[in-house]
Length: 272
Image (cartoon, rainbow, N blue to C red; front, top):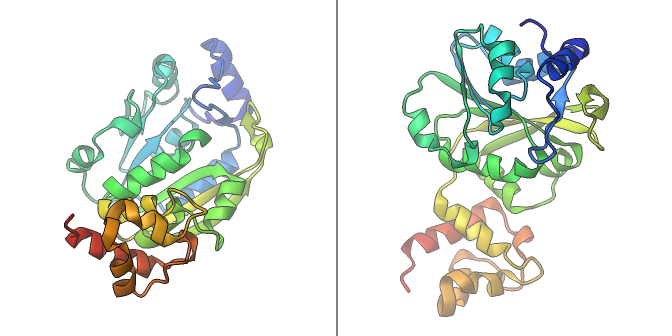
């Protein structure tokens, strides 16, 4: 099927399969081909690119990616969409659809069978934004970039100076860029707020130990770094902070990525 993202075609698909968008899975179907074109351009997809798409919905973004990429691997949790996706993108021999929860798949195993340029695309269900990006940064070693649509407010925070556990992971891994804003009016059904597309250029995987240190540091946000680090370093906390040159009365969001790296180095060698 051509031009899945046209409003008329999307409505026809929904009617044909008597498909009601699922609130449980946060489904809002994109019906603007220009937005899809901009996403594909931002992702810099070529004939050497394997695209991993999370949450293809009825296949609007998958269709556009199939025209540009070497291969498109889609992961969809909603099994109601099997016949729908067969109808909309089944004709593309470079597209595979896996009906699995992407958050539970063995990403390292999947990537071990892929080569060349690898990019992740997703019009994210908002409720899995953090979990999905974390998974890619921790496990997606061969994925070079992530292009995701998220709530506009989330995108603004992640590209500002605001600090959060997710921002510290992104800053460790590479660079993040605010691509463009997407109006709520180009979705069926329309969400309550506008969205935005982010580009994360990934240069490094995030070590699990770094992730553990950041999570511990933010466990009780109002507490000082000295209080939160006691979960990891117990009686050695003061000595660890002193060796890292970190003031005990600072809070997690005041630390730099480099200081978290120093704490991670201490955590790697720590013996209880």
